[in-house]
Length: 115
Length: 112
Image (cartoon, rainbow over all chains, first blue to last red; front, top):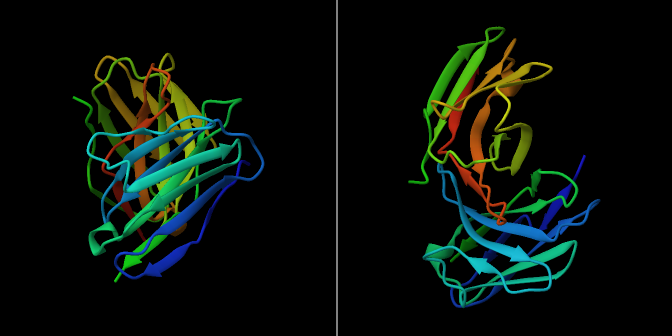
C-alpha cells in the first residue's frame, strides 16, 4: 500500500524559533499534498493545499507567512512554522494524493511542542 | 454549509457489530471516505465509496450511502478490541482541489 512518511515525528522547540516538517510519499508520486492541524480530541483542520511546482493554497484564517509550504518535487512537501509560539503547539498531519487513484494517504503526524 | 457531522462516542461489546454514522451537507461530493486513527498516530484509510454507489463491502466493513438523506454509515462486523480507535468520515468535492472535509470523529470503544 501507499506510504507517506513525516519527519520528525516529535519536536520540541523554543518560542521564536522556526521548525521544518517534511512529508514524503515513499512509493508513489503526488502532485498534491495537504497539511492539516489537529488539536487534542478534535478533528483535522485543513491548513493548506500544496501543489508541486506552484504556490500553496491556504485556507481562510491560516497565515501564509507563518506557515511556509514548499512542494519542490513530486514526493516531498515541507511545512515550516516560523517564529513559533506556544499556541502553535499541535499535531500536524500531512496527506498525499496518489495521481492514479482517488485516494489520499496520510502521514503518521508530527507533534510540535513550543516552550 | 460545509459541516460533516458524526456522533462523538460509541461503545460496543467485543464480537458485536458496530455502526458509525455520518451526515454531510454537500450534494456535489464525489467520494466519501472512512479513516481510522489510533492514539498518537496518523489516519489510516479504511474504505471509500463513490457517490453513485449505495453500498460497498470490504471484508468486515460495510459502507452504506443514502444520497437522498446525505447519510453515510460504516458497519464493522465482529468488532474486536483492536478496532477501538477514532473513526472519521470525510467528503471530497467535485472541484479540482481534492481536499477532504472531515467530520468530528467518533470514538469507538470495544469492551471485552
